[in-house]
Length: 352
Image (cartoon, rainbow, N blue to C red):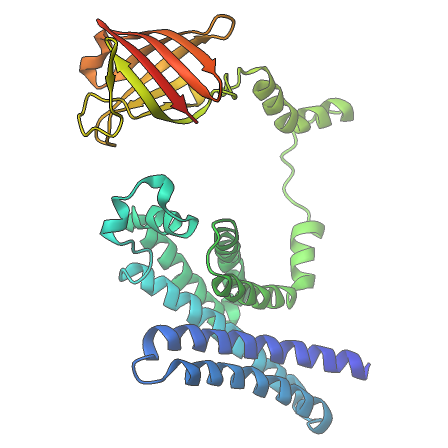
């Protein structure tokens, strides 16, 4: 029992110290670095954690009275630390201090952006969406600091924080950001488990209103329920896959080109010289002429038996009357595209 009591005290104190220390570290690094050196901010954050662990031991060994009141203080520190941190995040979104992307970077090719900058650029695209997320964090934080609405606040903030954790991990944000989110999430889990009996009773034991349509046959009833799983899989299985030519799909650099039997330099700056070709899913095809601004988009059809290929262009408008008809052949390590682009004959060697 003594060890169990020590474990509970250590848990609540460590969570309180971690959350308050991490919150101070993040806010100090962002807003106090002008008056406090970073080593001092880090040192104070570590000191908060060390003091909380030390207090847990002192609490267990020396303080016998008011244990319940002390526990409430530490739970209050967890609630306040989480609420303060997430509310600060919320206001940063509203006042354009988060989800900002450099304008110069936004003009770079999409594929050159890191996962983190792609994420930031996506959220930066809609200020209204950022306001909704920020306001949700602020409202959830306010609910969390009032005892009567504490559980509602936990339930509001939990999906927000789970989403943040998934974004941080799968879009490869900084490790420190991921750890910070996990610490806040651990605090929310602790607060949620304080109402474990109420939650079990409400979600699993409380009788819900009967909305059954009265099907008596259990096999038929469960088949209908599980159809939400197997019927979508059936539709997907019978649907034609969009990647019809997986071996061809890719981005190709033009290494050699002849137009009307005249060789052209692929390093030329002329806008009539083809420099890159894309074969994509859904039979999409793109010809690029020296620049991202000079591209034609179309749909190709390929006869894999004889290599016959046709491309019907749909953008820009003027290219719709100039289809490409020819052949796609393998030549050593290169792919050769020959045929007619309107009235012009072309011969193109490409490397993937």
